[in-house]
Image (cartoon, rainbow, N blue to C red; front, side):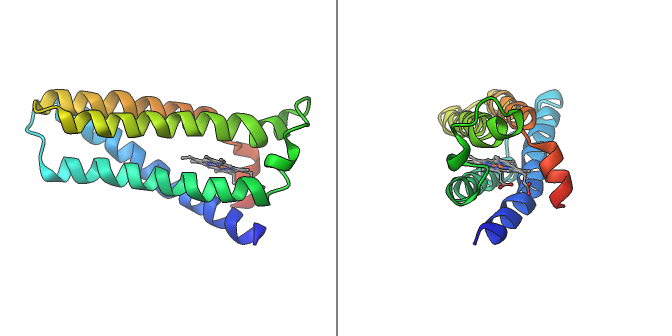
Length: 143
Ligand code: HEM
């Protein structure tokens, strides 16, 4: 169970990153070229939302089956365990909350430029937060 969930979380991370980068690049282009917000732009946004929410669900399961998750919460002096049991989950939950707020906010906005700006700010901040707390060494060794 642990190995399977870990593999899925590790692989899905690539898809989640790809989708988040797509939203950020697409919103930047939309903002700079002052183009109209189309159903394609909405689709890109919802794919980024679904991609990260799926990763959140897999991460939550992993948190309780991994020896590096909840069961290691007491080992705060160990940098690597503090990362996987506290910093990574906490910061990622905050990041995904920001992405969700960005998605909800864009729905209430009618102006195209403001929609792109909202996506860029909230998805962009989410992406930066997620990137700041990836256990890179662990990931590299499992790919
Ligand atoms: C978009 C959000 C997230 C991304 C991109 C992400 C990505 C990753 C990556 C790349 C790894 C290393 C995987 C490996 O070593 O095979 C990892 C490990 C881990 N993640 Fe996440 N994660 C996210 C959210 C979460 C959340 C929300 C939780 C928990 C609530 C979580 C719990 C864990 C745990 C416990 C590990 C260590 C697993 C182990 O090696 O035993 N992740 N994550």
